[in-house]
Length: 217
Image: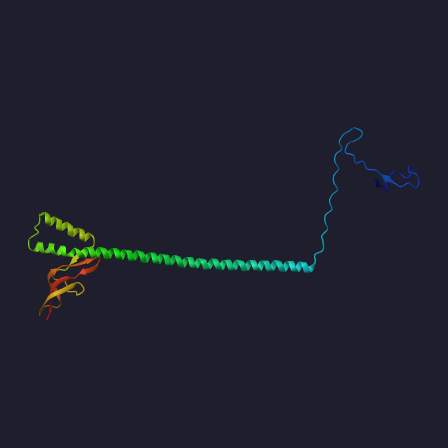
């Protein structure tokens, strides 16, 4: 029961009687038994903006600035760590590449040295073949002549090269002079006889040519 100042009409209400009105909140209409539609709930009042304390606002702003500054410092620290790790990775990669190159070069040098030793050990066989040719023991058309030729060709394909011929300019890094003869007509020292040819493997002298020379008196 609620008070209503507008109804009932003053002419029909006994004098002095308070004015009241009644609201029927029954969900079923007593007249026809139909279900009444639910009434709309009163609209909620929007909260009024509360006044913000200036000190709180300043404190909040300082907190945000401090948090942003700390985040920037952390980002800078992480970027420095990334740069340091990147430089370290580059140095280690360069060291790995250089180490691998040194290992490969060492392996190649060892391979060449081993091949050179094997080829140098066969020079004595080539000397015997050359002596046999000079003495007529290895005649052309014979099986031994063919075998000797194949052996020399195989060794040549592996990098063994012979050098030394009559008329060559004497070079102490290539020739070993076993005999020498002075000549008034000579203007330089030259090879006059090859006793044993010299050999190189991959451009490196494994045995100098043993020769006789002639030069100015």
